[in-house]
Length: 125
Image (cartoon, rainbow, N blue to C red; front, side, top):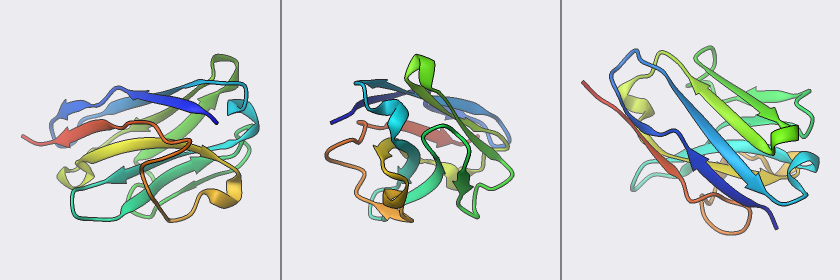
């Protein structure tokens, strides 16, 4: 099991930027892929971005492609999500998730084993 903790959420104006961090406690972080998901109340938990265990492969949802960048530093057991040109529709709780690459599906649970507790991002003027 991987313990994950997100940070970096907050309130930002449209067009602004935020950088989320996901710190892992456990020896499995570097051998597993990592994903960022988000969820709005009443809607599904959706994949935002994912990165393979050593960072060679990444994927993004169409809604964030070109604006968000996922990265990781295995030496620090930490993953990141740089979010630029934020829009009100990016408002959500953002979760990080650690699993095999095949587990980075378009929709997840946003809760349970190998999920963080989430960090709230609010984009509003």
